[in-house]
Amino acid sequence: MRLFTVSVFTALFFLSCSNSKKSFENYIIGDWQIENPTLQSFIRFEAKGEVTFFFNRFSYEKDSLAQYGKWILKDLKQGVAVDTFLLEIQKPPRNTEFKILILNQKQFKAYDDLGYTRFTRIEN
Image (cartoon, rainbow, N blue to C red; front, side):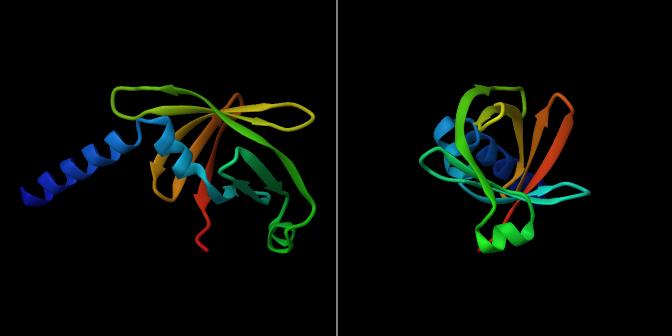
């Protein structure tokens, strides 16, 4: 019973923290590995709305051969149990929009027209 109570309060706390744009902006900032079965891509979200995309681990480690753009949090869709954030990445040749579902402090899923991709935070 005690474990259940702690779990409920933890879930409520996490959900209450996840339902604001400011808390999401603080959450997304940092380096993320894009969990792709064929590539090891990386993306860096910066506080000023800048984004850097690295094609592979070598370019990420050397901070080279990157594409640059901007990220904008467009909308917050409040759901019954979990909120979904609409994020737009602006970079040539076209902008990309993702619906983001936060899984935990170190992972989120980004949904687009083709399906979803899992992102994992890189700890420095």
